[in-house]
Image (cartoon, rainbow, N blue to C red; front, side):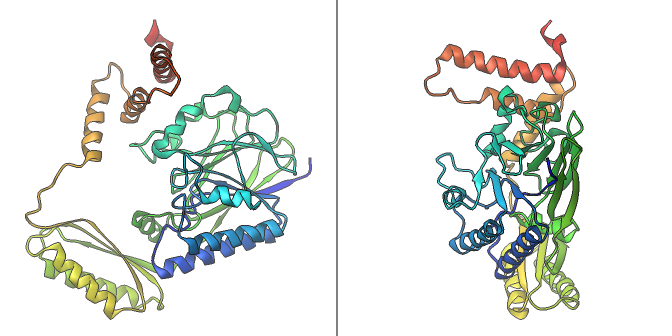
Length: 399
């Protein structure tokens, strides 16, 4: 087989940010990405989930992305995609389906062969990472070479999302030449049990949250992989970084300080930062801690005055961890669940991680499928739990 070149990208989250400057930068980033694919004369592009931030994104961003995919098609470059947890729809009411109907991309639902000779298969990302239970299905194993497995799930060994279901590398379908992963918003490079690359490129643009924007300003990678395949040999890959956003992070602690002090500190640090930035730059202001006097509302008024004073810049505000002096801290569901699961893990007969306990809980919480008898449902749960326990503890637990 002749050499095949493809691009692996993920977590574009088109439509994830509302600010004008970031929407412009999102389009510029996608234009750069598509032009690079065309210049490299790649055979096809693989999108490993969360292409959109929701199944039905804002119309402006939807049109923009559709035009970019059309450019790839006109250049003879195929596009293959799986759903991510953000853009998945159980009823398939998604823009991705519309793009497939328009012929600009192919959704990977089953094994498919690209005209280059490369085979692709994959698993769609689901809300709550419920897709992890599919990875043990024997029909997912590679039947051809070279082949690519595309998925939108956290690999346990990456240890990035301890509160979320994940799949251990040993459970990935075997035999693939390259594993195109998505979902973790950080560049990570691992190897399968057979030595094949398991790559997470991180977000192509930013992701979707203010935490992603903060990570960007702290230097986290954003970009994609160019991968070359030749016969059954080990893939060669190159990471291409895309960093087109000018701006920076202003971080202020409110702990034990007055609202006036916090507002003054924010204004001073912001003025220092934008002194070296061109107009149109993005400034993320992060404020956390409990005020000693004053209120969050007073800080918010100060932030609004700052916006008006420096209207030529775009401000993103993260004050979710800012609290008033007398505000009662209510234990949130996530925090309570984390403490409870950690306690259960500590009380388990052998040493296990909290994430393993969470996997067991999610397995036991699966709903009974329509048409399945209660006896078959209970047997299926026992079988899945036994598989998890065997993988973690070995056969000795069943002796």
